[in-house]
Image (cartoon, rainbow, N blue to C red; front, side, top):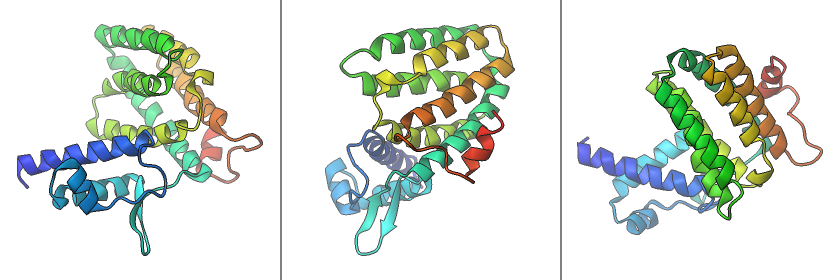
Length: 227
């Protein structure tokens, strides 16, 4: 595969994933390769490759008589994503904190301050998504594992879809990020792990509909018990 072809496929994948994560393409929307190719001005081949990657991410699936559609959002799916995030992000924290550079901490402070301001603005949902992701990824990049980072980013994209149905202005990110940042500044790895776990699990619980709880017998239930 040529470098140009790979770049086009990557761009199509990024564009479609962004549309799904931000809700421009909602659950059940059909993803027709011919229509997408015409919309983006590319051939069908990179679109088909992008769809295969989105399928692997769990963001689309094939339905009989309908073709490829955007995957739905379920409480069971949200619980699984949260459980995997707890495992992978705390793994990244343990590797990252001892390797944090002063420049990483400067970036995290700046992102934290910008999020604190932006979350009160008119574009709170989109601003939160961008700044929140970069705050966490700045920390996780220090782990030095591109493969681990890629899995974390894929799960974060799915978490962003769940968050579309929750008003981030009523969330806990600002306080949780302050705890994570404070622990990072003194290089207290276990404190960062604990703060990260509280943040991920607490954010999931806040997004649950009234009367709902962690599914019994789920992977998340067993992992939450370890907190």
